[in-house]
Length: 282
Ligand SMILES: N[C@@H](CCC(=O)N[C@@H](CS)C(=O)NCC(=O)O)C(=O)O
Image 1 (tube, rainbow, N blue to C red):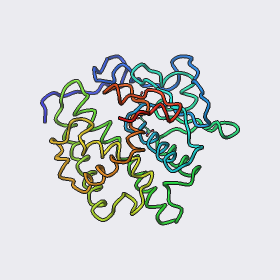
Image 2: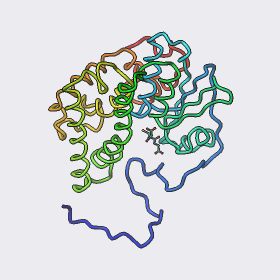
Image 3: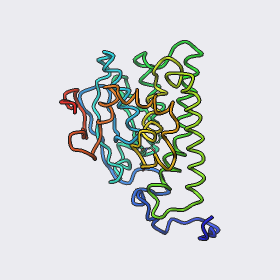
Image 4: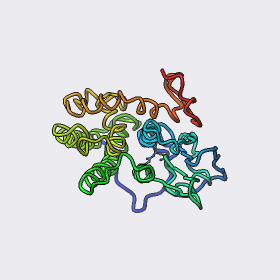
């Protein structure tokens, strides 16, 4: 235990900067802060996102659908810079009242369909294009179980472990211990499942893998939080095998570059309106 302690006041008030990496965008109220319409490109599918793990889930699925020959999956991807508060513009809030990337608007329906929450977007697109979500009821249930597992578990990894280990202004033992314990348990859940199967739901690569890979795959490949040693991530050998296989897929490598506004110049594709925006591939 650390010896710093805190006595909560009777009523919490928003009167102090937390100082953490996201202090300037975090606020305790919902809704738009300013008027800002969203741009609309020439394709039916309009994605408003950023290449974080939650954003990458969707761009990987869209690139996988295109790789499968589903031409209607062509899409425009616009960058939402969450560090600058663009998720609080009125147009974005209309697409996602929760003000978080990713958000999708499908102009191929009348009226246009808005979809928010990455898991809901994956299911919507998989159903629309009849791919990466098995139809047979028990295989479908297994895929959806792992997809919902991911949606429920990853906030412990990102908002919990990642926040306190990598982003908080100081290192605090209590939350790092609590979330490291949970993340290691989650990695073990995945490792035991992947000892029996090639992919999370069985023999088929599905949206459950696409949702889980950018989070837990990134941890074992040491692409987020620089916690590979701390978490002994390489000891989850089945997760490492699964993540390494998925990382080799060309559609995954393409999806990882869309809406990326940081890192090596040649990997950045802040906006994507055409397949050629991703060429030449590195
Ligand atoms: N459960 C949501 C989580 C989305 C999410 O947390 N997005 C983050 C980036 S990874 C975001 O937009 N944060 C901006 C903010 O919190 O203001 C989903 O899976 O779509």
